[in-house]
Image 1 (cartoon, rainbow, N blue to C red):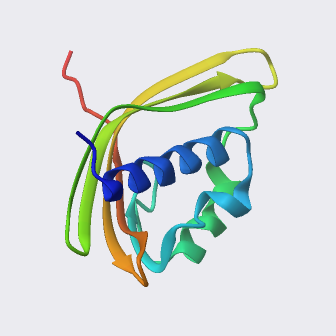
Image 2: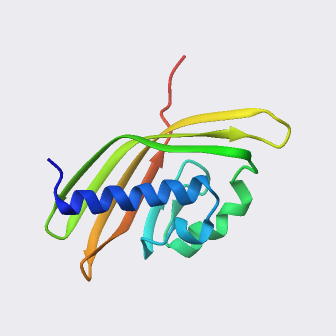
Length: 133
């Protein structure tokens, strides 16, 4: 059974995925701390603020056409007191302007801190599995 904190965190992450998928850039980091530490799959791999992370988007974010895919699956949330964490698998994809479809599967972990009775992301880690072939 989900508790109230877990429900709030799930809603926060649903808003994050929705904002990302629909290109609402001003909403993507709405619930991230200003001094959030983010590890991401693309260089420089480590960001030490929301502003630094946001400034990098235009350099690497694909210019998708039509509906984008950005879905958090198998989400687990654990909360207690003023801290919580969540993790799952993130399915990303869409179509590039030339019609080529791209898809990717990455892992996502979020660490939260309760500030003034609201949850904020203080650490986000997105990583891509390395599969030997």
